[in-house]
Length: 123
Image (cartoon, rainbow, N blue to C red):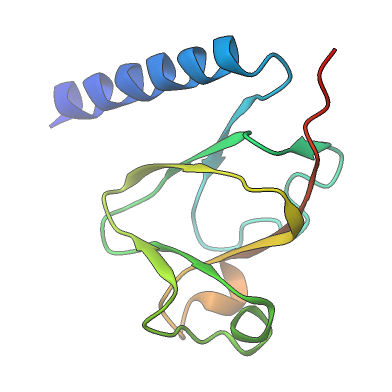
């Protein structure tokens, strides 16, 4: 099991490096997705279009990319993107915000973050 997880982490690192090679200012950030995550995680980071968040979490949890209304209410809809592998890479899109939350209504209040994503500007 540990070997598979190690291989997955290496594969994600390679994906992040390839992404960085293609977009000089994009970056890869690891999120330790667990109960009581700091809701202001990433506050000091200037996220740009193309950055990648790598979520590590226990399989009993998941990560769901939701809109603002579902983020505030801790709900999900069939249109939200749900990740369940325990090790997921999510590329951030340009826009006002990316909302990422667990799909469990019991855990959502303690497992959600809200990010602003700026436009990627070439050097």
